[in-house]
Structures are given as structure tokens and as C-alpha cells.
Length: 181
Image 1 (cartoon, rainbow, N blue to C red):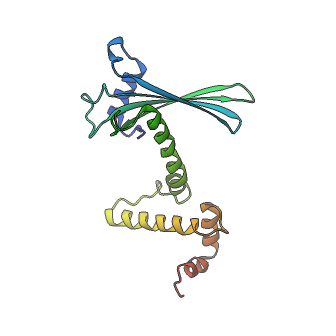
Image 2: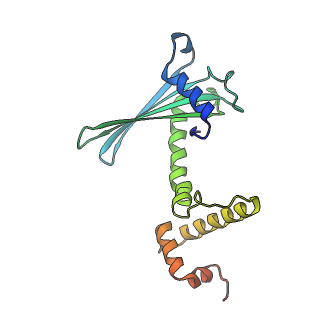
Image 3: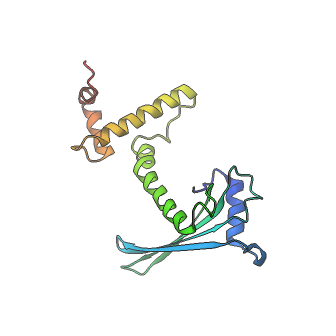
């Protein structure tokens, strides 16, 4: 759903569309907003969706173009910060309203933070220098196996603790896999 800088043409087209809307462009701009309070801050998320770019962007199965603005107010200081994200989805307005898209986008980050972030940071997946296909696929499978095994151990509550524990005692890791040494 989110569009990152590795798609520069798509990012630029979306940025131009949502940052500088001309009066004629506002044929299909739908918005939804959600406010939440927690962790010492108030967060206001506003999603704008449009199908106006569907015929112009060279993106497969484009259903809607998206712009998410997050406004965060620190309760202790009153400091306000704003971030913008751009995205696309293959869901049409008939399949998902802006309210549903806002919820789906939030759920996407739960997956990103709960699965991809630990793989990237703790298991250093993004730092890998391997580029040959069989080796990258095998290592990706091993990382996901390690991740799932570590999550299954209640006495090691975080992936980082599990990684440190198994690095210090690799025989314990083999015992879990029931591999005799």
C-alpha cells in the first residue's frame, strides 16, 4: 500500500497530484479521518483517496491513489509534527471506502512493525550482501524459521534476546530443533 522512494516516478506523480490540486482535479477526492490518544500524544490521521489518476499512472491494477497525513500533537509540550505518506491500492471505491482504507493502512504497519522490522533490524536482512537467487531464498527461509522458532519460546520474549541467547549457546538452539550433536 505505501509507495516508497524506490518508485520515483510514481512518488512524483502522486506528490504533484495531492500537493497541488487544481480545481478541475477535484472530481474524485474522498477523505476519512481518525483521531487516537495514547503514549502521551494525540494522533490525527487523514486519508484522501482518488481514482482520478487511474487512467494516467502506469501501475498494474490501480484501484485508488492515496495520501495519508499524520498530525501528532505531544501532550506534554504541545509540539505539533506532521508527516505525509503516499500510497496506491488495487481496491476500488466499491470494494473499500476511505474509512476501510484508513484501517487497512494502519493494519499494514502492524504487520510491518511486528514482522518485517525485526527481520530487517535484528536479523539484519536488509544488510545482507548476497545477491544470487538460490542463496538469498535459502537465507530468507532460514531467517523466517529462526523468527518463528524464537516467537514460540515464551521464556525469550524478544527476538533480540533470543538471538543473543542462541549466539551464546548454539547447542541449545540445536536441541530445540532436536538435532543431535
